[in-house]
Image 1: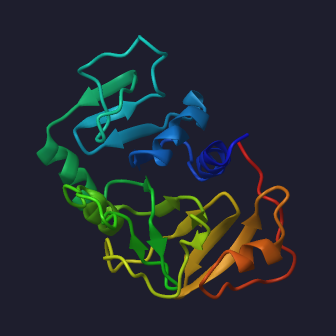
Image 2: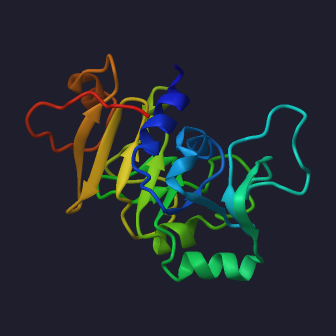
Length: 217
């Protein structure tokens, strides 16, 4: 499997039955495809959809049914369309059980930078600030490095999305828990050693005992 599938499959294991979960655009949107529909999970998008399903087959999309990034999605039985005010009321009111977001950098305290792309015009951070601040649990799904440079760093060089620390980072190399202002290495990807992870990380990692290989959905 490729690195994006590995990350999405591992993140899917963090989702529990009956949760209300927001999936960010890009890589996080793949997670819905690896969550068993029988778990009764409802995926939410900031643009006002509750009950997102997996991406539709090629040519089978509905132009009126998209996620917050404009990507085509499907809807599960019981899905609902709501306005943006109610959608952000759910987010800001602390009603989301989890959000899964992409990341550009995560610092040693678990703070996320994920909206400002150097050298590119961007419309703003969208709902990312609200999601990181308001969701009960925040999981970052991203590649461990970009062009050979670590994305998990001691201090973020890019603007922070929120001062709140995220709860977990899942990359193509590792699963890392963010707690007590430190980064704890929990799992390593298949075929990846602890030494590989340390070499690709520019922030201190807390490593306790043997680090198991991640299991996937």
